Length: 443
Image 1: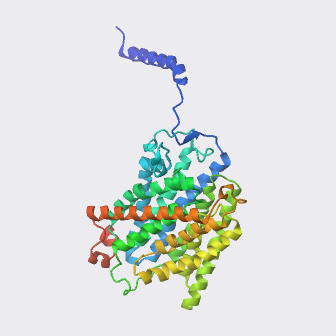
Image 2 (image 1 turned 135 degrees about the vertical axis):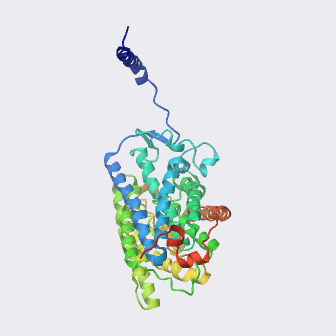
Image 3 (image 1 turned 90 degrees about the horizontal axis):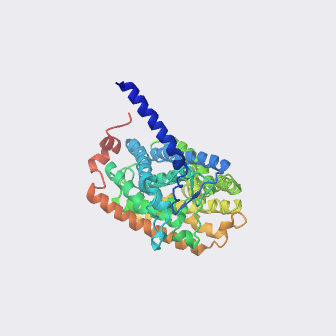
């Protein structure tokens, strides 16, 4: 009688023999067909190394950069809740990007719908492999391109949170981030960068003027108006509780912005070099412009003003970074600083909307200025893609992005309102969102 051990060994050997026989057939199996947006990877080693670095830098902009920048500007009782917004945006958007956000943003489909939204071919990253690349970046592994663009998708809704800080339910913010990413961010991203109508028109957006900053700024304005002002706004002291946090956050944002703008060259090349230098120059000029206005009007220069001027300059140079020379970057920064001051200080008090941390005043206003000025200062000698740039193309693209963002954001807010409610109760707001929403508090 054959022993069980011998029988198992014989079966194992037979299995190995069968695999060996099948191996040539498996090896000869056809390579899976590429998706519509893909090309075979032609690896650019230095470029890949730079974009790997840039991905880490841009992620740092949200956590801990934006979290600290916003966290320092709220009252102490809302610090944890404000940092939680940035953290939640990271978690929610990352999962959504894997499921559908990437393919809706950068997928390609046939027909008129492709002008507005991507395909569903790459749901759950189906069809993405280690040897595929997006047609936009044939030298980068597609997984790297997916990760790099994810960091942009993460920070955009986190920026909006500055407009509704200190009064929104955490459940509402979670639902808002989820719906807004799919209904607003992904379509606008596709329309500008993924083969949609704005890109076809020739709208220039090097690193996210319309896709990130104007989009987030307009959404923030809608949020501020729909939610209404914080309890005691215009009466109670709502000064920042820790400007040191805000200063540290600004520094982290500034460093991360080198990857934000420099990495958008999609390689380690001359355009990345000019984009990085412009990203150093413009915010310095914007800080000078902001502080000159503030010092003149208020008789004292503030640290908050300097920091906000720096961020306004970073926002304004974003759409132009790889399209303008340093003179253009200097002028964009110098112009955008005072314009952002008007948006963040004068406009919201004049129109009486409570944009808590100036999401629209800085990102919206400076983003609009920078995007329009890109059409004025774009230089084909710096980047051949700037050939044919005009102010009217930029204005048409901005108008389209702003309308989509405003309408989409309002729809998302209404869904949130009727599903979970938007604002915390007055007592909870007075107590502070750290404890009322999260059961945590600083001591």
